[in-house]
Image (cartoon, rainbow, N blue to C red; front, side, top):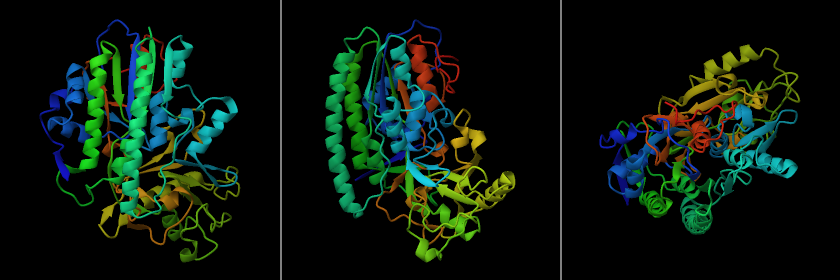
Length: 461
């Protein structure tokens, strides 16, 4: 059973014009921050208009419902870190699901980097999270269920689509029950506090949407999206939870935020294969033999000029930086790559697949800038960087149909997949950035915002 939602509904335009830009007011003592991974602005707005999310509609009418833009890339782990710190990736040091060690070209999962950082200095990431700032300022703080020290990489299913879907549905149902029990335990303690923040994140929706996504975007000409009943039921479940919270929360400030939305996954792009076929990467074996092998096992580094890892990251094999770097004229190579990549066309559909290519300096700043990819690729809806590319592998062809079981995708340009921001505080802004959540919380509680935060408080007009 499916639901069709017209994303051009006019009924919620008045609500969309609300935000958190507020006139001066007395500070609050407590904030409840609820994170819902993957909650999509378009789906939420459509379900609200259809009368299926009465609690979210009530919260929007009490205060605000606006579009929340994700960071680039809209990778699950990275976007949550940016939201919780108010910092761009150049300041917290995490740029994609997979990073690399320049001297050895070894892929490294973001989750492994975070875990290693936690084991070394007992901190989740390299910069303070908003609740750590508040705790230092004397506020009570709980974020045990906002797990930035145990983030998981999005794995490739190894069974059939139907079997994976059934298993995922069972697992997410059990996870949600456990998380909701844990939430109420935390919430009851939170109600006893005089001042503080409770941050709690629900993760199942992102996986459900990626598994049970039915709407295809490539070649589509209308502005309607089709949503699977399983996905709708999850939104309704969270609406029921929100209704219970609103009955108990009183005047406490509440923010509900997501890190990104969702779109379809129809075709996959093997960037390393494109690099090999266009002379930027050299292989030690023929492509058919090299395809499928991860970790750059068939790459000749002595003659390779560029390589890809993760779901958006392209690196140059630079002299004096990479272990076997050969590129001396960085600017010339970047221009050549950008020119050729911008014209990549899917021969099956006739469409250009890359929406935007950014130099790292255009997106990031800070002490970890030199760790960032040299180029960041943002794809169009319907396309995703391949899992082979993510771990330093190649495919047989440059672009092929998605046959991996997951039909939803958020590894595209963030402009196509906005998340949501709800609050019981009124305002006038149409949209905000995920980076704005942390400084807004600090201002709500009357705590000075660190100058290095990139986000801006939404309490200021």
